[in-house]
Image 1 (cartoon, helix red, strand yellow):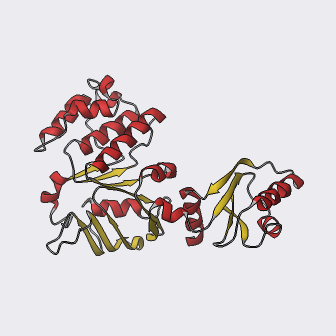
Image 2: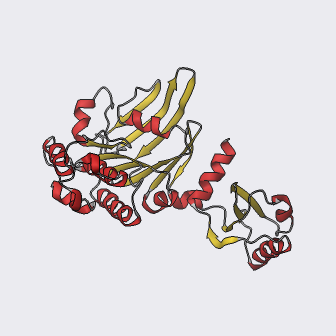
Image 3: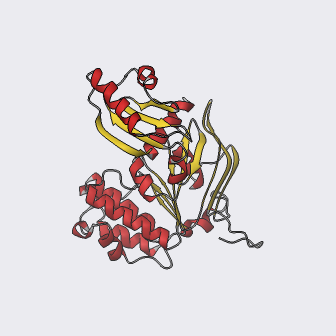
Length: 314
């Protein structure tokens, strides 16, 4: 979206968003943008404020302070103008239980000026075999895919997807990922929430990490996972003596437990995680009878960053 000044406007722009529920503050000044032709993942632990933030973007809730703009418009004041341009997928899609899948999708398509062919979406999401099945007889994963199809059938310019692959089997999840990538290629701004951090790392161009109602970090997956050098990760029993492990590591290298039982040994910028550091970790573990499961060397993952930030903000 381009302004009269020639500047490319974000498809979604959240500035200083505050939302309170009586005495509790769910969102405390969140600010981020989502671009057209990009996938923006909004991540955070339960209670981080991400769902409330997205609901404000969808026009389902009124902010107490700050501004939200979708395609340059106010999601509540300009709801009628935005409705045909925005697709919304909710966890509980409110699908009519007695209606057949094909009829639900045809009805949704009839509400839009230039919809996708329902048959194409059914094929893309592997729903052809249940097209004539009543919604109430679908599995949870199948209902999830129908909700995704309904959100996308109108060719939206912005798509808000809440846990789009929850309950899907691996094959169906890959199909949903491919559909999201096609939306991005078509210039759609995709804003998704997910608890699957590997999914966010695969799909997202931009990641917004929330905790305690605030945006605690934002950037591309590469930007968020770089800057700390290589890491050595492994799983073991929770509560290992991190001070003792760090004491045997080279200067600039330290150990952390971002979540119980998950250990990450990393180095500060300018330091090196070399063979000596790896040997120090394995020797220390062997001396204590600790078997480091899933030992791997590489850049820290988005999951590692997520848990580090969550721990630091708690």
